Image (spheres, helix red, strand yellow):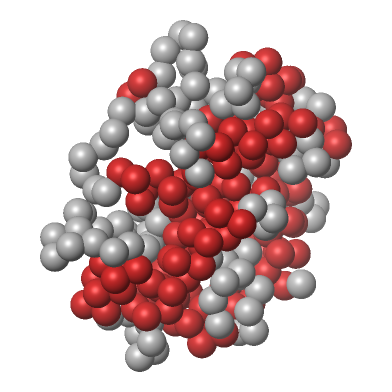
Length: 285
């Protein structure tokens, strides 16, 4: 993966990183400008895809910045959204991204454990119970009767944050819930995951794979079996020569491209094959 870490894409993003470790606004796309063309969250997602880890200076700086925001030493510059409890949502976002790179941050781990408790209570009878979710959400966050708008757990942040914090029974129940959710995984893919995309060479299929990549982070017994239908699907679409090609339309600037250029088809094939091979290995091993 070193070749991708040294790509022009990574270099361009790193050059935009500010001294405090951020890229300006954290989450709010509406606040982008010429001086802040990318959010911190977008930069982190792209760098992670390109192979950056906590051992790389740009990520270390970003994690330090997010930790300071999480503990109240700093604050993300985004405008406070009124659609949900902004403080709870901010802690959720920051903790999720910190824990994607390191499990050594006590504050982020505490936030993760809080959400793991809420999710565990929501599935304590083996299936999702919204009333139990509401009760646990308000109790754990010490909220009043209203408590602000609830955040659906079928989204990128919750799924990522608690991937190593749930017991086996709850994990399998959560997996079933996510796979059957008609709205997919919010922020990633907007259709039901148990239904495969109709067209493999499409941006829809790339987003679908992104959601499955997230679920593949769950290593509990039984999780692999629930995702084997995806392995069968991608293998059906393997080219006769033994590689994968998702076509030029999957180039979205986030998940593709990985190589510096797709002017030559061979580089697109290399990137697609790398991604799908990695997905298969994460599910099967």
